[in-house]
Image (cartoon, rainbow, N blue to C red; front, side):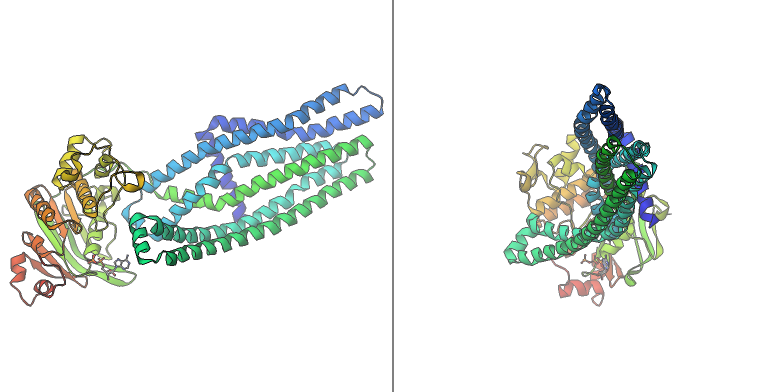
Amino acid sequence: MLAPLRDAFRTARESLTDAAHITPGWLLLCSTLVLVQAALPGAQVVLLENLIDGLSAGLSPWRPLLGLTVVVGLMYPLGQVAVAAGQRMMLRLRLHYRTELAQAAARLSPNQLARPEVTTDLEASQVATNPLSDVAGKPVQVLGAAATSVVLCVAVSTINPVSGVLVLAALVPTVLAFTAIARVESKGWPKVANHDRRAGYATEQLIQQRSGTELAVLGSGARVAGLVARSRAEATTVLDRMIGTAMTLELGAALATALLFGGALIAMVSGGASGGAAAAAVAGTISGLNAIRLCGYAFGTIVTAAPQAKIYRRFVRSVPVTEPQAVVPAVESVALDNVTFSYAGEPAVREVSIKAERGEMVALVGVNGAGKSTAINLLVGSLTPDCGRVLIDDGDASDLTENERLGHFGLLVQEFGRFEFTLRDVVALGSPQVDVPEERIRTALEAAEADAFTERMSLDTQLGQQWGGTGVSGGQWQRLALARIYLRNAGVWILDEPTSAIDAEAEREIFAELRRTKHTRITIVVSHRAWTLLDMDRIYVIDAGSVVQQGTYRELMSQPEGRFAQLFATGSADQD
Ligand SMILES: Nc1ncnc2c1ncn2[C@@H]1O[C@H](COP(=O)(O)OP(=O)(O)OP(=O)(O)O)[C@@H](O)[C@H]1O
């Protein structure tokens, strides 16, 4: 029972601290308004009692009447201004949380991105930015409502002490109910996030141009829509149960609160209070009920947001702030030294040793599922070997930070990014440098054979039809991805089927350019096309996770019984 309460208090404290740093002016204004409001119901009791008892005693009514006019006149506008100030504070906090989250997501390493729980947490954190930004004003409201109850308790106690205590005790059922609600919600929210993530993924497949077109042509969109509906229905069931439980508990608390107020009134009447005092206490009690309701609502918002806030903060803190990446332009050697790696106990790479030196072009060859991508992921550090070592310039790569290690590589993956930004940004993404000069971008485009379709475009041209920009073909996207690698100019280039979407003529030119410029770097290529392997300095043939052969194209072809000759003879790999 205590853990959710602790989480709610922590959330309240952290949100207040954030608000104090990010938007101190609005926090101060909100707090002041809420505290002024808190004094009003208590003042109302005292003034009303003075007015009625004064009238009965034949005293002048003007002073209490003027006071009451001010108090009642202030209640509504103060409430309105406090709500507006709270909303303006919330907007600023939301901007802060959303920016902070995008920056944290940008710092995720390939290693973290490979873990499904990280992606689930990221999406849950995205959803959490709304309740989290709403929560900062709530501790102030809870304190304000608690202050209202205390002031009211003191005011009512002057009429009847038992009634005063009962008015204060009316806070307890609300606090207990919302603590119980928090327990239910802390279990429910991770489930909702998981179902939402699945539904979000399936929806993306429906609306993204490539996958959506494929599904439309197959006439299978409805099947994917069914998957969306199922995940959304599961999320709705969990949410519905949570709301049902909350409703029952809130109703119970409301009933208990009403009984306690009723008790306070009975105690007052049986205590022999004057007519004025009784009328004042009834009016105060009505204001008190309102204060308790607000307190319950504000406390409820905190406890509901607490599990989401916990996920958000855990996620943001799990991605430490790092130095910007520095690209290492000269690397003498990289190697996998007797490396073994298994996915969930299933070996994908066994005792693999591969080495590449500066100036060399080295190829990894093997059928689908042989282990080539796994070997590459081990080299760049997105996977960690079960045994063996990864060496960069003869030093153990695990001694480097993730960022230092990634700075050694330019990696063109099979599923290259189709980033629908401006032409300038699409290429400049290759470098962590903020401002990339125009000539460097144009030179990279030329080297990647992407100049023919881009030379007439301004670098500010928007790419991608969904933004009303220029349409780009699959092969053109791949050339832009290669341009990023040229711009980056890291010491080690890893090109996983760099020309898979590119026509034969451009492919020859791209490989000719790679050969011409290879002396300044290490180039590791995964390729299925025989002719691209002709000029490789060394080819590693990988089969079922092991290196079964190595040598130049000619050496390997001169072994007709070898795996390489078999692969190209049987057509398992494309021949040209
Ligand atoms: N994330 C993963 N979880 C579990 N198994 C995986 C994962 N990734 C790859 N594997 C398995 O590891 C083995 C090697 O896969 P890998 O992707 O390295 O092959 P590949 O040679 O790159 O294939 P391709 O030519 O199709 O890209 C395969 O049996 C594959 O099913």
